[in-house]
Image 1 (cartoon, rainbow, N blue to C red):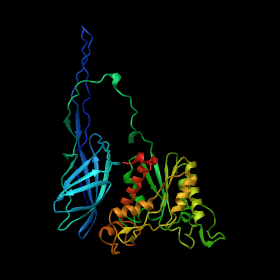
Image 2 (cartoon, helix red, strand yellow; image 1 turned 60 degrees about the vertical axis):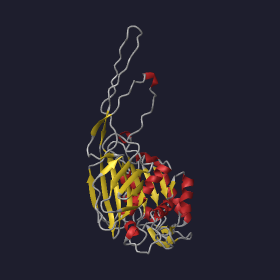
Image 3 (cartoon, rainbow, N blue to C red; image 1 turned 90 degrees about the vertical axis):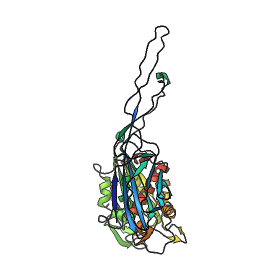
Image 4 (tube, one colour; image 1 turned 180 degrees about the vertical axis):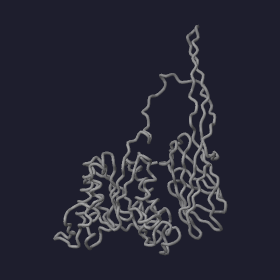
Length: 418
């Protein structure tokens, strides 16, 4: 059951409302200049969207989004209280602690800055007993949320620095100065959009856009059930293998989805990004999905070079893991990992090891051990009932892992993260 509460009670961040006024008096005796400063003011305000993304007997998942309506902040702590004894059990994109009913969520470092009118989000799983109402009051950095910008006076400076003492600095780029980019996604069902609203599975590519600012647009061309070859050549991959053991492609004409990306007018352009994630269906021994190791690396190179020729920047990803437990530990279960890294090195393309990052996430969330029931509990809130594909809440967390990797690996698209 999903519930959304948009709570216009937030605060934190200061906006300068009045500039410093300098008054110079020329003193005839010594020509001394005296400066006086006028007080500055700041504005506070924010909005919180608290959304219960899934709920089951005794447990729930939630997303919390913070929109800053005041001056930029460089670090944040959000606090609230649960009314009926709910308890946070796991969290991501924030460090969450709880004492009694009081909850405190602190930024994770990489998402500590919130610009004016910008947003950050985090999520958590929780437990409940009698009821699970949405919190009604929040505070940011110790200040009650007011729901609208309000002025707060600040102490004036004692003296003004001389012009010669003011250090020069390079302006920090802001979203308003960024060139728009498109992020093109090629992959299988773990990346793809759902077939209908709210349907399972939901690929992480469907949730990725919420981590990017307004200057980045996601075009998700991932398709369920595809290997890299069938994605590139649909419907021309046959069920016949050649002497090398590869599925015959006849005619060797690209699929309409790849042709659309290659279109000189409406496809990939300079500054765009192409994310490529396959390796799940490619291990099928039968045609038409089968792809051998050498062929897999070759086709990754073909896609990367096509992007580069258009000025776009390719990024390879290893396939997201399904949930497989070895006792209480989630372990890896996908192939084509070495091939992806080899192709990255050969083509000078960054590789996000989503396979390792995804099962590391499962361990952090405590999804192992489980009783194999993928329709309930924390595992059921993350995965469809096949233990492989994602519910929307799970896809959102995988997308968050990809966003974090962009920062950690200093991939250029990180500049467009919220």
